[in-house]
Amino acid sequence: MPGKYRFIVSMDVAPEKEALFNEIYDQEHIPNLMQVPGVLAVTRAKAQPFTLNIAGAPKEVAVAGPAYFAIYEIESPEVLASEAWGKAVEAGRWPSEVRPFTTNRHHVLAKVV
Image (cartoon, rainbow, N blue to C red; front, side, top):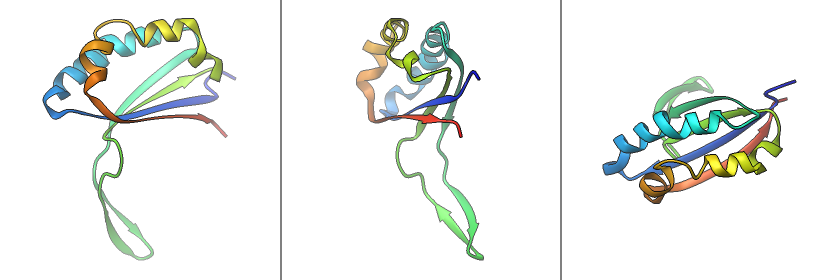
């Protein structure tokens, strides 16, 4: 079954580079990674504070952790170790114009249950 794994990448970006980060992520980085065999879909998100009703009372929840997320639907863990993935993550302006301005980076591989 395709898409049995999710690769979740999260990070913060320097405020002065946020517009460039979003432009390059959407217009270059994701299209490059979508060309990698075994990458099926990508969803990007930005964390937001929220209110949660739990145990009978509302609770304010602040953003804890990185602000930006990318969730890659992939066929298998081997996709991430492939030569194609390695080339795609180094393509375009991402390595030189964006990556140096990201912090608090986290990578998680999850199997869909």
